[in-house]
Length: 348
Image (tube, rainbow, N blue to C red; front, side, top):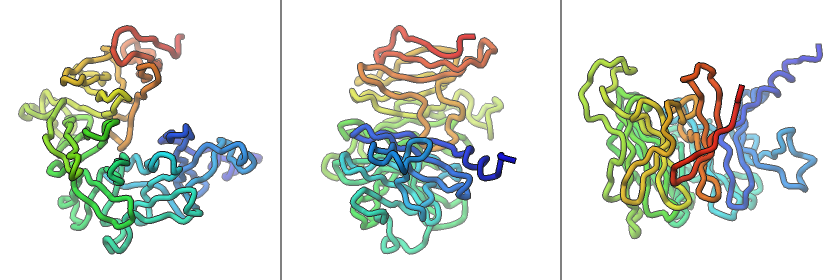
């Protein structure tokens, strides 16, 4: 038969985590069944690399010894970040040891460890995910999971800053909640947004979205405020998974527009709609619909984001029409100032 096991596994390569660097070069993650599920960071091949490009038009960035994957929250998620502007590097988590590495064109294929054994001896003691680069302070801000005490009840989640100099120096910026996700730095580097929640809630049950100022001298976080979400009501037995609190709100996927306004998805209406927080703190539902703008699996994996910013103050997002019973997927182009929007998609 012409249909071999190799043919099937090669056709089953999954693609995720598309990201563009400052030069507009596209990077993505490939998970390859024919390589025992190894995950590889790839980038768009240059014209001179066309002969060695894959059928997907990419070339491998990470070496064959690397498997780019994180096990934070066990589900994992976003496991690589683009490096400082203009240097063509990436920062990634390696599955075998759960350490962070930096790799750039000048490294000749030899990854530079950011969290080396000299910083802590035990592999997988710390796990890292969902990072954002703080270029001005030469550090990566990310979710860190601390397994120093292996008892699951003693594992600690924090938002942590990791130096990019290879010293392994780390600073805990936020702690106290059971889980954290989506640390996102504003374009001017002055404010950090993040999501947190506590057991027994899951992220699709109840979370808090916080913003906090970044101290310009120390890099620490000050004046933290909850701007949406929370779990103020008592347990009400409403049928939420694991008994989440009645009236609780789930807030996910924070992202800053190029103009410095915070956007996120939230289910305060019973549906995950897209919201904007103004400079004065006002929350606006940009496109009210009885529809989910969160993507198919909100909160399951770190790094999910179902909308992006386009030139000219526009946003692209999608939703699935559940009300009509058709299940049609819709692409929506809207303005960051709200108002009218254009929809495209499956019309019949």
